[in-house]
Length: 321
Image (cartoon, rainbow, N blue to C red; front, top):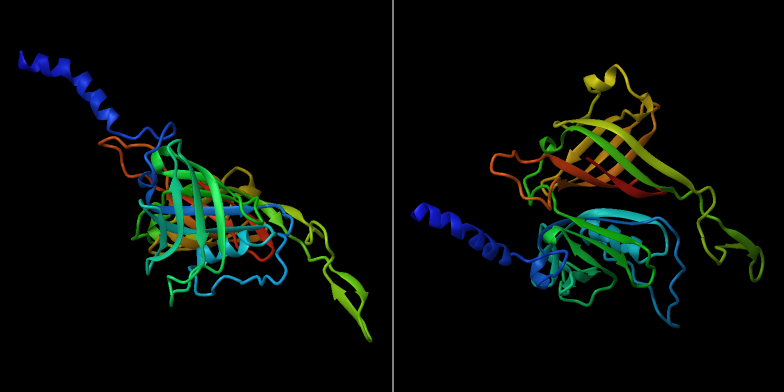
């Protein structure tokens, strides 16, 4: 009798339990819905109109001591050139963003009831963390997957860059062994080519050179770049040939190379095609199922990889899954 009663009550109890969880994608509860570590990938694949500055305004570059990933993001987002950057931030659930290892504050964010959100990344001086930011960039977008990811677009001067946030594979403790197995890799971008310059007559004697006005400023020889194929990570720091790919398939889509993973799950790699063309990337290992709850007997998933190209003159990025 008691057993039957417990079964009858179970659906009601289940509905009450569901009601205690925030319904992300439909509504949010505020900044607390975004908390913990996030991997980011920021990209812009176009030139944007240069921002007009008030007379006497001095453009201050980011502080060189800034966290590398944040510095790359700010440098690119504050320019009007194509760029790509990857790294990690930590949201405190109260509207502030931080970076490791020293837990410096690098930005703020807010989440609305409809899950739309704003996010600002600021530069900082580690010697004076409370000083006014020298460089900042602002994004607007939407929180997704119960707070496990977000997609945003830059809204301040420069603009047109996108920012993707996903969960990293681990908070810390990653090694080369964290990247292991066969992956399909897909990355796209542009090779920025050479800088165009114009010539003109200087004052006094001799001639001078100058950058022509208009858009784009750097457009000579721009070509598309792609990295699409198969890689096998050996867990020791190398991308190696694997048996299924050794006897068939498309040779141009098989890559080898080397990689290095840091404790915070960021890393670098060099990936080389069968024709000898190499691409350098910076990456973050991310969770393969950040938005899905695993069953009791499911194994912990392997890491995915989100990356940005780091070769000189190349802007873009992609993922390996």
